Image 1 (cartoon, helix red, strand yellow):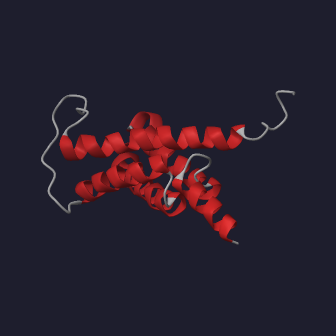
Image 2 (cartoon, one colour):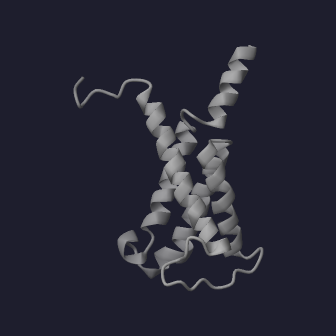
Image 3 (cartoon, one colour):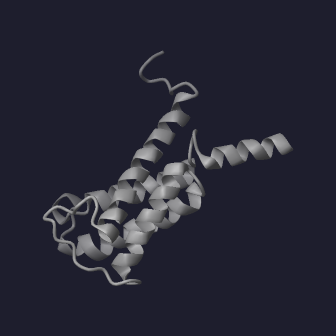
Length: 141
């Protein structure tokens, strides 16, 4: 196999699943940091978040959405919503500080936005609730 040939099955689906789980775990931690203070945010100072504020809603999306992405359940619609959340986060909180993500602190938001868009197109991959549901439906047919 050449380095220029596409990877052979089942590795692309497995690597998609690993990417999904790792991304979901990291995203979930963003929500737990904001909602519960764990893991602690750098600098240690997390302001009180008012329920139903924009930051609280974002933290709940990160927590619940991260969990759904980890287990691979409703991956496409969840990833679509999370991609939108990250686009809003980037343009509302980072882009006003400068054009370049590396200077405005928006690298993570931009990467998550496009990573979640990839999951919208690619789905959950192997080892997911979505895949198990799809397998169950094909057996019934």
